[in-house]
Length: 267
Image (cartoon, rainbow, N blue to C red; front, side, top):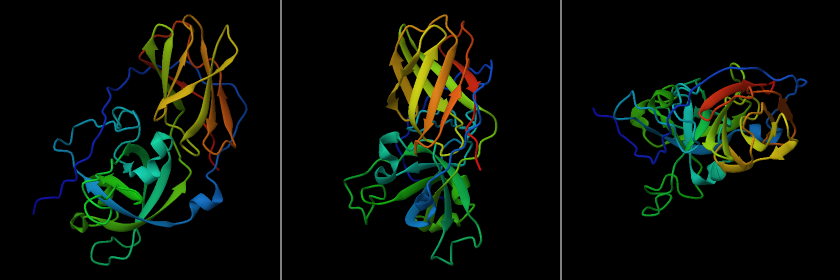
């Protein structure tokens, strides 16, 4: 029996070149998801399956090749109600299948990272084919993740979800792109809350400069920072914790490179 394919609008980006220079020297910090966000809440989930399993789908958060970015297939696309215009990118959720003994795999749950957006389809009502239409809370999973909690024949499944702290291996990553005085920085592999509320950048000859959110976890600024070592100040989404990563890049950095810096600590 052929598997049902749920079509999504994905935005794919090319994976960056990666280099490693130095980690930060700031003092340890911790970040946690607020207690009310950890409650189990009702939602629904479907799945998609790429026509070519080798396809590198980056998603609407701009992470590029999700395997090379460290997220693998433990990812999820969120409906408009949950996506928060991309501010939620990088957050972690725990999902479990409920209310359907035919299709649920008992005693299982999965942890996934928000990397994509499930666009609403206003040609259908929310209770019909418009799974991702407001006010629905809907998760779209890779079939590899979906099958860890339910049989694929289930289709549109009732689930429960909750926000949890993200646990990441290694350091935060900063991919620098742009041209001229325009600098765009994609921040990935963020532990703790996973999503970011504010970012500042500092050259070795400047003070701290606030960056603006471009889209997802891409942050931008117009500033001449060439031939300067770059440092970053990253604030978690609940604004309870700020990590300062000094001298993340060398002064001879180039666009397209990825550097590693200090990581949020998790309890």
